[in-house]
Image (cartoon, rainbow, N blue to C red; front, side, top):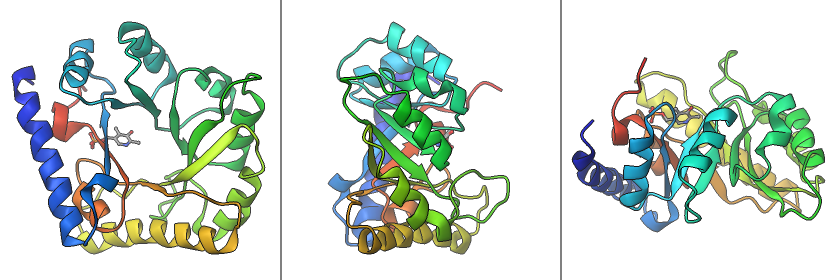
Length: 232
Ligand SMILES: *Cc1c(COP(=O)(O)O)cnc(C)c1O
């Protein structure tokens, strides 16, 4: 894409977020845009930062390391998303500010145990499989209370909330149900786990972010709509 197209694209995304929020009686200021720069060239990341996008998302640790080296801007909050191997957990400390894809208790505990001493707790979102698709990662909704309850005991993690990935379909009812399920899991955690203070719902991508905002998303993760198609 042409980088001089970026400002109007950002503006259009913010407008669509605001309209969706208003449809649901929500304050658009409670929805944060995470710009997913994965697989795009460095020039795209630089243009994003120059345009005022300071929440940036990547899905591979090696790529994240490269980004931080190439764009060492302290204003940027780096968001890690996408499936993570447990053995790569130690490398995330000091790189990611937020990890969206904590899809199991085992990964959470590995992240906790590998946290260097004296470092602030890592902000995480527990991924919940609210689409029911077997190939999707995440904690099953009916296991969320037990699993999150145990993750809350990890001293080096700060559970900011939950994350989900919707199925890649067009049917509005299916997408809405996937997002509404995440919101109801959040409500259940709040009522059943006194230690749970999560407020964030990371849901919505290029394909479906307006529905996600209508259903309560506080973090939308958008790549293609901002930056165009990724190189195959
Ligand atoms: C790539 C990716 C996105 C962004 O997807 P787009 O459809 O390009 O907006 C969001 N979330 C996750 C976890 C991703 O891997």
